[in-house]
Image (tube, rainbow, N blue to C red; front, side):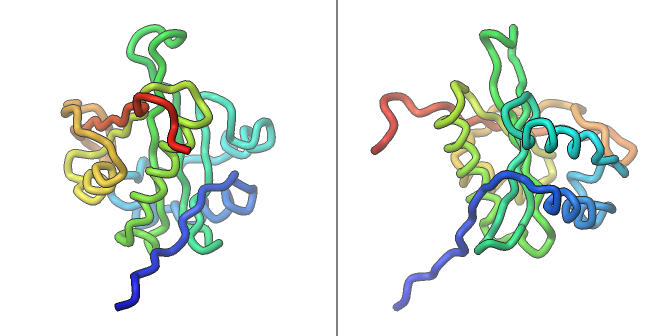
Length: 180
């Protein structure tokens, strides 16, 4: 029996062409899906941040997700704090995949890669993800990526004309030295 080969999921810096594609793919409610549509949003700020710092090295960051060298979506991470930012900051991540790339395990792989990247290249002790309480696909992806459910944040997100509960997941930096 031959082993099943999964597509190669890679994270890479965002390009201007990627932002153009994100604008096209995520332009309406069907693009990002029911849990990520917050209305029409201009991307001028993202383009400015891309020009200034490549969407890396700040409090709001983004990498493109590719599968076998094909753009599949993006991952983002934002600085959050559970107290003073200087001593209690962590990263909160988010993911947006194009519809054609959902349901194939790519989101799990991309989130796992991002967590590894953040623990390798930042001093964060904690990475967290919040998802809609009804978003079963993201809940499964987060758990497969190594996140543990911490609890429900009630009426935390305004979307589609109503408040939605969110589930909070976290991954903590592994103890001990990194594996070789």
